[in-house]
Image (cartoon, rainbow, N blue to C red; front, top):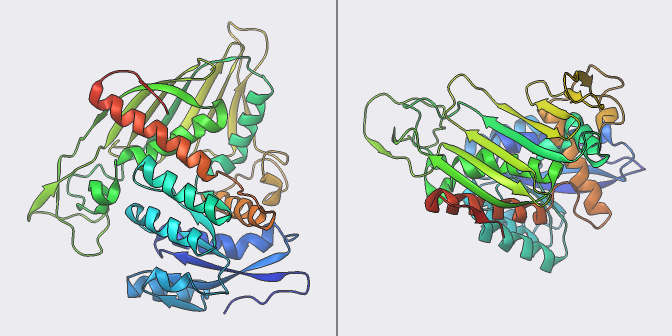
Length: 391
């Protein structure tokens, strides 16, 4: 059962479309929101969950106490109890659902990629703008306190003008050639593959830390060309030995070089087939007087080199602490790193708090449109083998 509102709060009805892993994260984030943002004048209530798989719906209700579960997400949109909707469905459905949620007058928390193309993303952004609702996009690496500290140091000019940066997103979830040919590997359902799955996070970090990319040159590669056909409901982690195979239609790897508006050079590498690498994500930013470095697998640490020594200048390891983003909402002192789930709670707070204030909080659909424009330019460059302007 949902937790009743207190005298100081009112219910804020939410629905989640998609009961997979990310749907679980959104449900937990709504439930945890009052623990970390007790001053908010609302208490999220899980009104409904939608998923076409009965077992997934039943599991979500059992775990999180949704009032009801439906197979068709459209049933949720007319419910007057629902003020906000989370979209955690497969990528190919994001445009249709996102537009419908906005047109129903509900606030929208939508996972990336907002659509399979920049045109899809713009369609959702336009619908949100027309409807006058608020929207937040799931670029939660922005919420990591160490990343927030890095952004502040860069804004303060701590390392001088940025000269070059490296962004990496390396994973092995698709490295096994016997992994099932699921929707992720088809263009109609999974879009551009590693570009809108992993590289988009890197592009968003570049824009968050350094500003817009203005031009890019890139190349991509499809490392695993065929995969065994997937059984109904299979994930890419399911292995199939023998049997018929099908073609992988999108890319496993991308490398790009870009320039920011301030002329800093940025290299970005993303792979879903990097054997031996599990969520090896991070960045290094070099400036005229120092550098910053962050590793997702050590999320509470930021390596910082600042000063006037230039040659042989040392670097120090700084731990996240109160004052870095929303760190103090979760931990009282340095040395206690926030988890991936914690960043989603912080993103949830940005979404709900923003909606209550009549604005889009966290990463917005304008951010998502700008990120998608970079990916379109990357895809074009991979074909033309030339520098492509972003826009």
